[in-house]
Length: 450
Image (cartoon, rainbow, N blue to C red; front, side):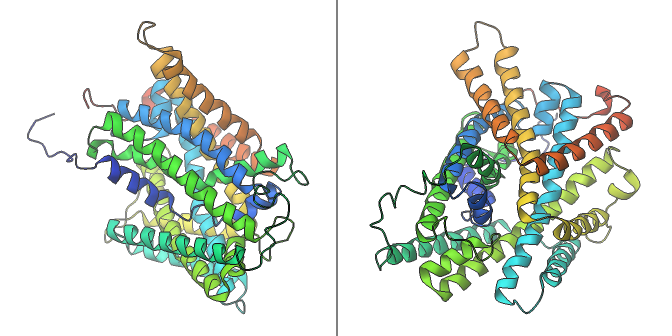
């Protein structure tokens, strides 16, 4: 490469990387999925968030270490394909495609439910059509939010979270039955409802809280001291997200005991906020989460469309349809409409809970793949004199094992639908690549130096 070619500037500090990670994950991450997790885990939401955090921390270490080797790729697809086998890389990529497709789908479901809280006179199906069309229209027009707007939105969310904590504090000191034995410990462990199977099923859904942390690895080429800061930022983002999420759901469980049924499971946190602060906080929380989910739905739909475009351009999918770009706005219009149609149909065909579990079905396959790739790269293939079991083998092995255990605890409906998706993808990929020949599954070659 010529030395006078333009290159990305390394101007992102550790602080910038962590801030980026928190913005991507969002300070309100556990709120949309709160009710679903509470029902699945019999009220032990805090416990599920903390267990999922352990799995994510070990996986974050693997992501950070693999980003050192492939600084410009930043993809589980690349890590697994290069370190293990192109066929496994394809399987990982196909599982990521499911994640990308499902994210706008569950955002459509949640937005339709939240909008119904404001205007219940309109049925769910009208809101589902509205939001699926809104996401598609804005993405077809090439509308994007700037980094500054995302920072302002994250700051606004943090303010609303602070207001929620203040309201919970006032609620607990204003007559809530805090003198009940075990009141403050029950969110962690309630002997009357505890079930290990239920908790791990809830954990398999609660992991949705952390989805997006791996995006930090894509900034390797712009980060100062990437060998150190990418891994630190990824781990610290997971840790800070886990701490904040645990505090949020802990406060919610103190306000709304698990024994009390939710008025609407999908938007349960909004009703908890209303219980703590009254109608004004109900409306504020509902509007905040609705705005955040609209932004997430738009971004995830465009991300899915761009992933399909990349696969179409590489002829992994039919190029004529998926590899086409709109000449006026520079967006893959066919794919935007395709994802919008899938989101709308899915909003009528499945629940938010099933959509979230299916998303995590694919996500955990990718997480297990990254942990396996890190183990292979840094321990299996490393010279015996240079490798360390505690440093190079134990973290990815623990990350893989915990992720596998959580993945196995997904409900059978999610596993059945996920396996069907994976079998279809593997069969198609095998046919398309004539048996996953390595030269037909492309991966970006990492630079020699970092």
